[in-house]
Every structure is written in C-alpha cells, then in structure tokens.
Length: 339
Image (cartoon, rainbow, N blue to C red; front, side, top):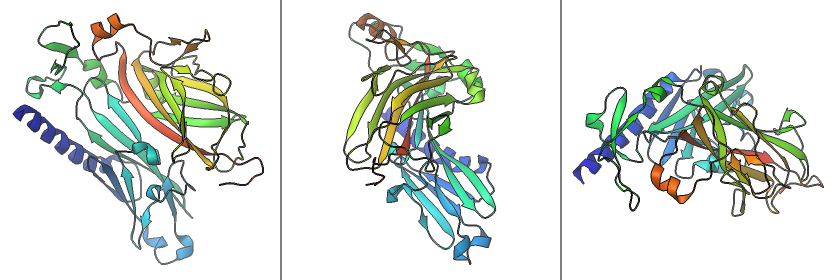
C-alpha cells in the first residue's frame, strides 16, 4: 500500500512538472504557458501587442479542426491580454485532444494544436501534457537505462510465470514517439469548412504516421465510432472490422503506415457536426490484419483465442502504443439548412 501511494505521488509530480516544462519546447513565436492536472490541460496564449488596441486586428485563435465549432468548452476565454483554453483530459474526445499510451511503460501523452490567424499570417502552437502512470506496478528502484523489472499485480487464472519479468525497452527508448494525423478527403481534397458535404457524398478517411515514425512502426485501427457529440453514437469498426461495409468499408493499407477507408457521408437528425472517434494500435514494424466476416482483411487488432490471451497476459506481441484520436466534419442537409 505504501509503495502504491508513493508511486501515485511520483506519477502526479511527473505529470505536472513535465507538462509545464514542455511549453518551452514548442516552436512558436507566440508566448504561451501550459498547466496540467489529472483532469485538465490549461493553455494560456498571449495576445500579441499589435492586436490589443485595434479590435479589427484581433487574431482568430482556435483548436485545429474546430475553427467554427460552436461548443463553448472548445473555445478560448479571451481577455485583453490572453486567450485561455481549458481542455478536459477526462473526456478528451470532447474537443479533439489526442491521447497516446505507451503499452510498455504506461506513459500517457495528451496533445493538440492551437492555430492563431492574424494579419501577419497563421501560426501553429503544439501543446501537450505527459503522465507516467503505468498499467503495471513498475519497480522504479530496479529500473536501469535499458530495461525495467515489472511485477504484475494480477495474473490470469491458472497462469504461471516467473516472479519478475524483464522487458527490454531499449528499442522504444531510441525510437521516436509516433504522431498520427487523421483526415477526410472528398475527390482528393481535404474536407474543411470550405467544402460543402451532404449526406451520401463519397468520402475517404485517412490515418497517417509521421515520416520519422513510419520507418519503425505500422498502424491498425482497432475501434471507430461516430457520434453527434451530444447523445447519439454508432460503432463503425469493431476489433478491426467494419460493422456495415455498405456504409463504411474496411481500412486498407499498402505500406502499413497509412490506412484508408471509403465511406458515404451521413449525419444525425439534430446536429450538423459528426465526430469520428478512433482507437489506433501502433505496432513495431506493422500491425497484423484481422480476417473479417466478409472475407476481407481489416487492419485492426488481431483475433486471438482464449489460450493465446492467457499465454500473453495483457501484452500484445508487437503493439507498442495505443492512440485515441478524433476529428469533426460538418455535414449540411440536402436542402443546405444546418441544425
């Protein structure tokens, strides 16, 4: 019990300390500060001096992909000197915060991008919070630079293993942390507020690894749902396979670093906005595809029987990260009237 309390205290300290210091790493001209708690990421953007006196020159400050999104919790509170975002890390999907979890260490990274548009141009500020709360009880005192000793708190029934497990992590220490991007294209053009999308429009969703990570990792979509951001939601992809191939096809890949799926635009009755929420596996080299019921291969979590689950415990063989991310698109009614 004492060890667990000490570990939780160390985890929380790391969460706040690393997050605050990370603001100094962002490559942006606009001054900003980040403060992280277990439940919230607060970002304070300093409004440039040239824009404070002239209201016509006030910059537009918004979260990436949410320029005109009406949810007040995703908009900054603007004063004379600052614009302040308060983003939930409990319901991180609400404003499109991305969460990345290292499956070996338990390290969690929450990140987003803030855009500042002014007469001088557009600037991007990358913000993130970090915590190292683990899935397992990592014995920190025995950790070395290249490996750690892990003791599982709970073992599957009937499963036997050595008291201590040694897990080599030197590869992931040297490999880059992956960054994912998600987008929807219409006839090769990225869907933004400038494009009109109506129900039934053929679209393509793409999920990509950044260039540096693509040399080390591969991707697989484990889960995808769509929601009206209010009360209604539907599961689209479950354990790597599409639920309704007519509405949304299986994700396909050529190189394992880019996943794409074709689908037809749809909307909920009482909302013009549709949010896609995805859980993506990041695997060493590439993720193994799933044999789906329609005979196609879906790139999500590999199906395993009970024996394999007991043999592997809670760890996938090549899954290193699990990333949860979201995107919003605006769907117009056929008549062009939005709700």
